[in-house]
Length: 123
Image 1: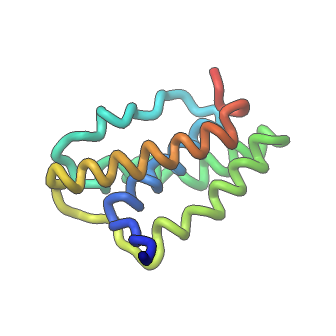
Image 2: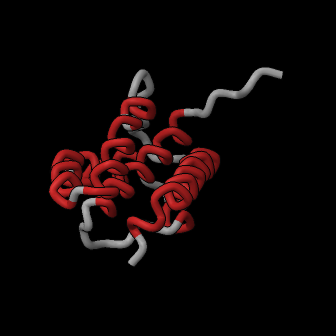
């Protein structure tokens, strides 16, 4: 059986997790949303907008921190085109199924980054 390709909502959730990981690696304040907090009728862009606009600031701040933070931030940054291209970030309110796909993608990617970089972003 062929592997099913994740839909745009799932991939957008993964993107949100990557953006929050960059923020945390930069040492910026704030707590990433819990997956259940994302089960609302919103557009993926509502969740992604602020973090997308801060990517370069977070990346440069992580660079100044140096060491493992910079290396992890650079790796995470290089992964961003995967969720962004050639896909699109859905610009409509999510149905319950789309919300679940978004949350599942977010939770899966957050878990992967926590396993990989948890020691760098733990409080």
